[in-house]
Image (cartoon, rainbow, N blue to C red; front, side, top):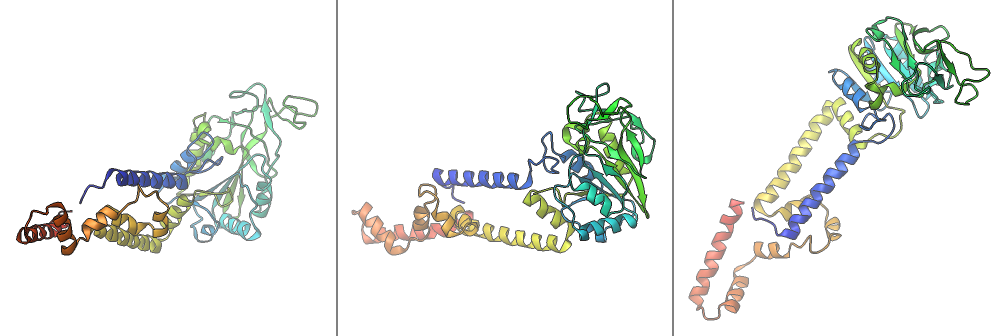
Length: 369
């Protein structure tokens, strides 16, 4: 294959860089609690923890709840940013009643309490700031929750480190993790202990049974973000939630916009038919491009992938196929004229020998490509 001229080589590099940038942008997110956000406020590490389970996955809609094997399956819902419809809530309720476990982690959001009501749970989020002036991580708004009841979900967990949490009003649910006795709910939003604020051990994690399943209510979704998983004993608690079940679902169906490429990959993983179709389509495109490279030039292959209108928008110095096209389609008469102009002293017999030599070399060069 002939080496392309420098301007065209620059074009190829720029296109590769552009494709890489688009792929990166389409597969990552900067949204808080985003499964594909690797920054401090994302949950990419939680996603990787779930991915370690062979039968676990991320879901971007609630239909998988209808077909999922609910027994020994846990679903984690983090801070829904939009309400679940009646049909979606019913799918979740049926999932729990069939033996599934649902973890709903929120603090001040308006959509989780209605969801708890719809699936038949008794716990509710108080939506008031939990503070502790004595036992905290970096400040009173990051309180510790050191009172832990031993359950399969809290095995070896000695505390949770919270970050801007609220408390759970348990109702008939069972608290399994609570704050210290010196914590309080900032009812007046003063940022300090004031009149009307009561000291006490407030529940931050509760468990309750509904038919054959369970609902776990967690009053601080921030324990799952990348920067907080490293704090005692948040990662251990997250691991226990996942490993005490055979399968896990990370429910991002109501967590805002997700990266399109990530959604496409999740859909592809869930559909064997799409996997076969996508594989055949990829193979077809590759064979088409490879054939154009073998019999033509890199420009031909690029033209196969990009529409003519898109190519016409590029600067001429980047996309100029005239030289390669002319050399590729030279005929005997064009060569005769060029040789006569360049070497007028040559006779007709010598000119014919040059033309024959040039034309006989071209197929050999193209085959070498």
